[in-house]
Length: 208
Image (cartoon, rainbow, N blue to C red; front, side, top):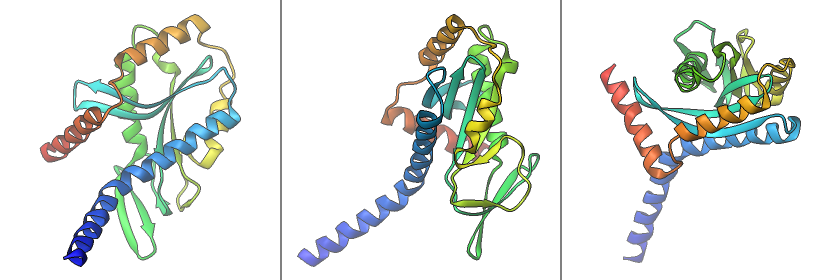
């Protein structure tokens, strides 16, 4: 009987690991971006993490990071993939090749475009929407095998892209207003919010 319970417990543990592994991988990538911001950006930059916003189309949109600065607003999508990455700006799906296996995933530029459109709805009466920029950040463990668009990066290289924007275009007062507006609209960080977002994604896939 003890062996039976041990086997059941081990089976449950393995199942939980399989379920949580993608979430853990994603959080590792997001944590890396947070560390990059702390190490390489000064107090002029404010990083908002894991922002779930209401979306009229799909219910909710989850943005990994929103970086606020006097030089612009940067919406950052993080991808923690290993292996070879193949993709083009206009391709619907990109490919991850890991050893002999290939996996398809949504073009993260398109994915982040949807995030930006939702953020634009939140900020349309507060800021010039041309000041919102997209950045895609892969972790260093992967290798790009095709020419990547100019806003797709590995590791901390995204920081240099952000620093290329050096002209002050948003006043400190307006920046505070933008931050307050986003924080007002962002859903509370909780299991309930995550569960709602996952269900919305599932319903969207089933309806497409």
